[in-house]
Image (cartoon, rainbow, N blue to C red; front, side):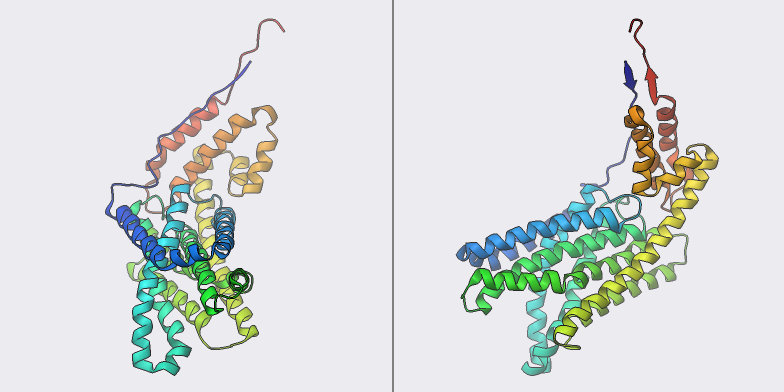
Amino acid sequence: MTVYAHTTVPRPANVRVRTLAFWTLIALSAFGLWTLRKDFLPVALAFPGSMGLDLVVLAAGVAFAVWVSRRFLRPVQGPPWSGTWLALMWGAFGACGLALVMNGLLLAAWSKALGLEAAGQWAAALTAPLNEEAVKAAGVVLLACVSTRLVRSAADGFVYGALVGFGFQVMENFTYGLNAIGMAGGVDPVGATGQVLWIRILLTGIGSHWTMTAVAGAGIGYLVSAPGRVTARRIWVAAGCFALAMGMHFLFDSPFFSGLAGAIGKPLVNFAILVVVYIAVRRGFRARWDAVAAEEVQAGSLAAVEAASLSRRRDRRKYLRSFGPVRVAQERLQQLQLDLVEERVPERLDPADAQPWRDAVTAARQGLLVDRSPGVL
């Protein structure tokens, strides 16, 4: 008989519910949901076909957002599930609901200040970068305040910003799909909703809200996770990322480059900016990861072959396949090693604070496999 020994290590909670930030996030998300329900539920109930199409697309959008964010946007491992759902919730309800209220106030102000004709051209480009980027970025700040274990690097800020933006984007698509019914005069409501969704998802979705908030979130993550660097530099990086996100939003909504070329080109510009920021964030995270892994190899917590395979999902799976019947135990050891390195990636932590994870790795390695062969075969 083969018995696998499972070693556990106490893990601090990723989300601290006894914090003002957590309940602020919950309360404002509830307010946003109430605002959205008040404005759009009557239309949704009046046109069930359009509502059904909207809900299907919304569910598919959330599934896609979770898959992309957890599989590709954060190096090594996806973010914790608790942070993933909180980010999506804030984007869909808190940020979208608050932006809906603020949009009405700002659009009216621009109409008075610029006149109806100029406001018709520029109001969206002047309004959305101010309020929508502010309320979306506030979600990443709140997540950083909910727990120091959620936003611990620029890579964390980047992925949570993307999740907040995805949440905002899918909810905005839902509301635009319902608004399209009235704009079409109530004729063919399902067709009107489908046309708007097709444009917003397939044509402009690649460079919409998720790209903007990911860029802003990377700056927030850098601000809260790099205390070894000059404070002024961290502030300037965060402010620069937020300003860049606002500029991306301004370009997206501006009347510049109108027509089909603009509708395609402006989202592609935003996506290109996202890729550049992602490469910089990923390079910094991997450099820190490699440095920590090398230190743990020297300390004996990792073997060189384990460190080489640990930082990439495909390499981890390939490494585990070589263990055959003892894969379950080896997979547990691998997860503990991932936890160890992840625990040390934030530069503000003392390496000695990760000792419980080293002890767990050592215990798991020593008790990986206990072979209890029966006396008679």
